[in-house]
Length: 346
Image (cartoon, rainbow, N blue to C red; front, side):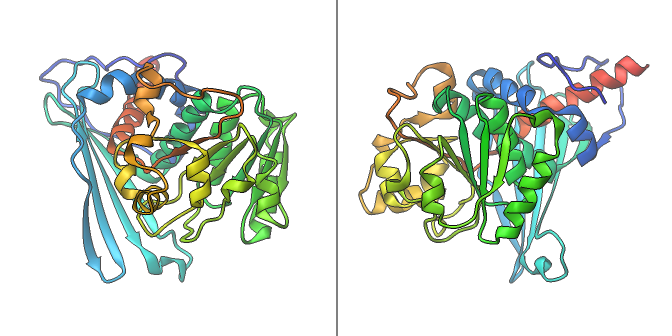
């Protein structure tokens, strides 16, 4: 499938025409998407289309004592976004024992004018791309344009996507240091990325030793872990650094300490971060900062309603928890690109 290079257009079809849903696998998504394209798509659509999207609170159901089913719906009747989307996610914590992924997801896209099913997508792959590109977009808006060193904290499934999104957002990056509690995983990821031809000129390193010392080197520090205790210390952040926090999604998880939150000017992907992110919920409770100290949401940054970085010395912090809004916008891009490709083949 060809990668789309322009803003997608709604797929026109006769109103009474019954269409067969298309299945888009992880391989299909990777063939359609690029980091530049999805970052640009979010930058164009978030300020305007996000206001047309209905996105109820995600539903969580316990299947067993150690497994969950989550439903994340959203919909819009805007002519520019005539879709209903539902992400279905299962979390089976014991799957790590038989070496199976603990989280699996599917995404279903419907026509909001007729209710027809349009597409089934690999929801896990879609989530990895949209999460990374939201961070990439925030970095594009908040990090220093001359940033040269990225420190990646964590070497799990999301890490390579985040690294590539930051490289797309900041072409000035020339060094990527990957730190992980299991050093071998960091080294292996660094070797894999070093083998990709598109990143000639970028040095990838598996960080060994003290994380605090590595953080001091980072113009951009990105975190994607399940840590319940702070990993990034605010005192270690250099002046002008941009801290990207992705991993935590409940009040008991924290990837940075209170000093980082106090030092930095904090921005969020959406208002849910204020009640879901452990770093922020804890900081509010301990009166480190208040809700009024938050610099703004991503859509407000893009539109100019809120100002971003104010100086080269300022530390910026971006905390994301994800949302069904970016799910449906990412699904829009993928679906419309795939339909364009199918029509070209006819």
